[in-house]
Every structure is written in structure tokens, then in C-alpha cells.
Amino acid sequence: MTEERKAPEELAPPSEPRDEVAAPEAPVEGPREGAVASPEATIEQLRAEVERYREEADHHWQQFLHAAADLENYKKQAARAREEAVARARRELLAVILGAVDNLERARAYAREAAVRAASPEGDVTAALAGLQEGLEITHRQILELLERFGVRPFAAVGRPFDPRLHEAIEAVPPDEAHPAGTVVEEVERGYLIGEDVLRPARVRVARAGDGA
Image (cartoon, rainbow, N blue to C red; front, side, top):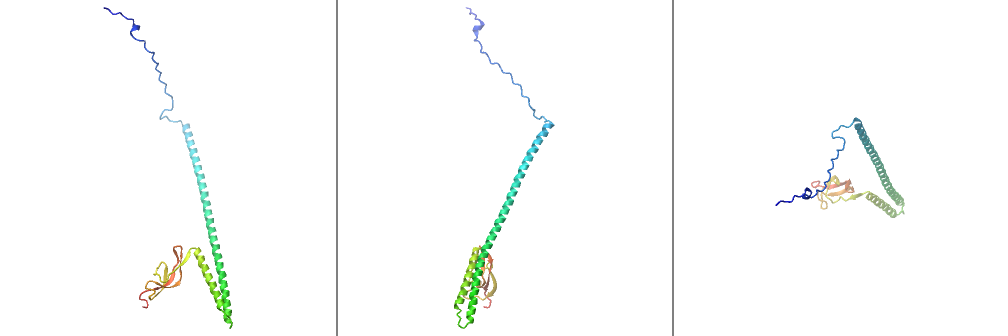
């Protein structure tokens, strides 16, 4: 038995048409790595960098000038404010002192009146002395109020333990029942604080064991 022979076109299906393979693109021409720039290009690049640095330097210099001007203005304003504060404090101080001078002048007038009345046989000096005392009391109170406005206040010393920070001993005296050794017996000059600092220590007499006992 013999096979019937087929024609070649009947043995295999017709092949699909294949896509055409694209040809590789040609490389783009450019500066090759490591290539040396031309002198003209190098000079142009350096000029651009110099110009950029010059602009930055000018910008920083202008900033410095503005900052220096602001600082100078601040110094002038601070100095002017300080001078105004000092002048204002001086005016307030002088105004209060003038008030104290007025009261002292009234006290002097009362003293002169008391002297005249005391010189006359029928004179009554009681009213004049009362006026003198009132004038002195008002003046003393006014001055203390002035000191307080400036942060100055007196502090007590008698009967307190001696403190070299607050007290200046001018004499040592024997202790007694009211003033044991190491305490302040008498205040000769009052001490004052300004804020929490000592403006003037109190000059005192201090009880010390063995002195005249």
C-alpha cells in the first residue's frame, strides 16, 4: 500500500509574516568625556563665575551697610531714651526737694515767731513751737517718701544681732539685760537699703562682753 504523496504547500501552514527588525540608531555625537574645552570657553566660564561672585559680594556688602545703620540708629535711640529717663528722674527729684525746702522755710518762720514770742514777757511760744514741730515732721515724712519712690528705705538696727554687712560699729559698750553681747545697743546714724543692697550701713554701738563689765 502506498501513501499518496502531497504537494509541499499542503504539508505546512503558511508562515506569518515577520516584523522587520529595526536597524540600530546611530549614536548621538556629543562632547566626549575627558575632552578638553577650548581656551575661549574656559575664559568665558571664568568670567561668568567672577561676575556671580562679584554680585554676591555686593549683596553681602549692602546687607552689612544696612545692619550697621540699624545698629547705629538703635544706639542713638537707646542713648536718647536713657537721657530722657535721667532728665525725668532729675525733674521729679528736684520737684520733691523744692517741696521739702518750702516746708523748711515754713518751719524757720515758726522758729523765728517762737523766738520773738519767747523774748516778750507776755509771749506764748506754745503755738509757735507746735507749728515748728509740725513743719519739721512734714518735711521729714516728705523726704522719706521721696527716697521710697527711688527704692531707698531705712532699716532698723537697735536690738538686732550685729551684722557687719548692715552695721558699722563705732564703739563697743557693756551688755545689759535688754542688749546681750553681740547686739546693737544704739543707732548713731540710720542705715538704708536700695532694693536688696545696702546703700549705707548703720553706724551703731555694739554690746560686747568684757567691755567695762
